[in-house]
Length: 280
Ligand code: GLU
Image 1: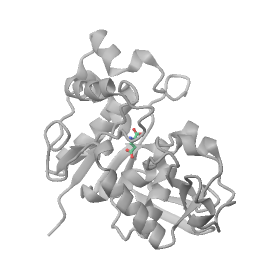
Image 2 (image 1 turned 135 degrees about the vertical axis):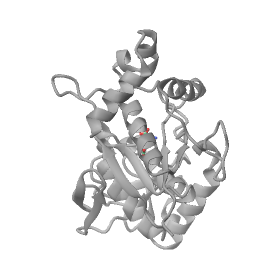
Image 3 (image 1 turned 90 degrees about the horizontal axis):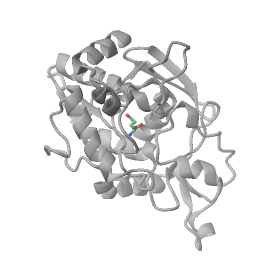
């Protein structure tokens, strides 16, 4: 029997949704629909310093306006609730424990800057520098007085590969293209990488549709799946929206939030058609 298709959309309530998100979510919806499967909405709000309640309700509102529908989510429930990351801490702690026990994680006291960005997904512009491995051999006791960050020890030099549904074979080398990454911050917040893997696995997601700028993160996540002995989903990375000069349309472009487009009288069906045309 073939597995039921389960997709997900996973916005972070750090601002209003913009056209780039909407395009990716449209693709996710279309793929779930075409496969006769289900789409899950998960709110990724573990980065408490950057997330706000008002954005969470705006996301749901804007997605409804845009015409994106889901089968499970915080507003309608479902078999894998809760669908809000801030309510799923026990799952992440369990995974951290498992990684520590199995020797995949080590405590680290370095690099404030990397640490601060760890709970947000590293979209292109905020990819972290490769961690030089200073704390690799440290043990928990070495840091007994202060809370460490926990890093995942990547297998240096290993050639990693996955088959992207849209882009074909993708390759990276651990330790060269990315280094030991944070899985738990010293201020007691799980990282994006850990939370997203734990949730996609727990919610039985079979295909992840998201922006191409998270391509490198997919390799990190595949290492986590392997270490946690979980089966990874398939990945479909969507192209990033660019303006006429080839510049990426970033979140800060206020005119392209769904709010602004709605206020300007744009028709969702037209925007959706344009979004899907950009992907095919
Ligand atoms: N919450 C993440 C973001 O908004 C989702 C990334 C993903 O789809 O894995 O960037």
